[in-house]
Length: 302
Image 1 (cartoon, one colour):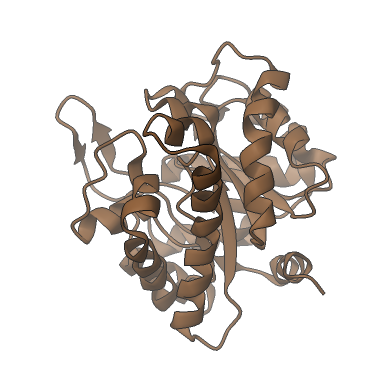
Image 2: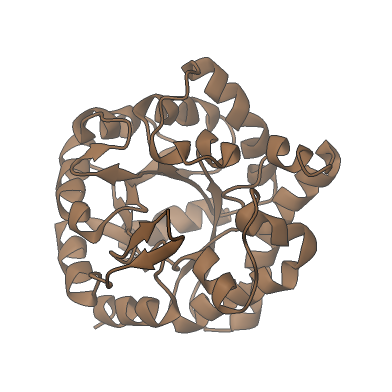
């Protein structure tokens, strides 16, 4: 049995607890992520810091670590003078670092690695990952995503996390790009007010993956907790697949002040409701740290 097959079987038995935000965990450890590569910069400069961040989440109760490759692309690395061969090595390293954290954790339960694949807009680092509509065709987006998907799949993750996708057109490109890689994927949209960030209905968005055998779960991430419930019910109705959810804390980013405002509105009681509605992979995204993941694990494991 391959690790990918084993992961799919574990998902069917669910629930599985995802980790929380990589960036907030790295920042809390004192690392500056203030450049266009974001956490991917540390793949080249401080890989041990990434292992330690994964380890903190495994020790808090996470079953799945999402790699630090969200903003890692050949184009983004090239902008920092990193050639294609070295960039491919850094993409593969992101999977190895998560595996190393799993080995160190020694939890006695199976631990899994999801290779993060962020949207095209993450490479642009201009906020368009929360808008979509880049002016590129589905074929052009597929050509952008396929090379790094091939490298990440070759590094041996248990699943590919096609995450924070703002646009159903980009989802179509990603679904095409994962064909034939031999690694299952989940597809997770960034949403607001019951629609994708690009404005499509969730019915249209989830339908993209309904007939794709490679996509074993669909859902939402990097959204307000209040947007999750309706997304879970829609995903179940449209696709019949297990649902993945990992929202932000509920705090709001003030771009002008470059600071988070408000308070967390994300708690274990919501997680139990999402699980009862059909979510099988549950965790957190921005501003959700190990203590919150510990609460989620406790809620789901009784």
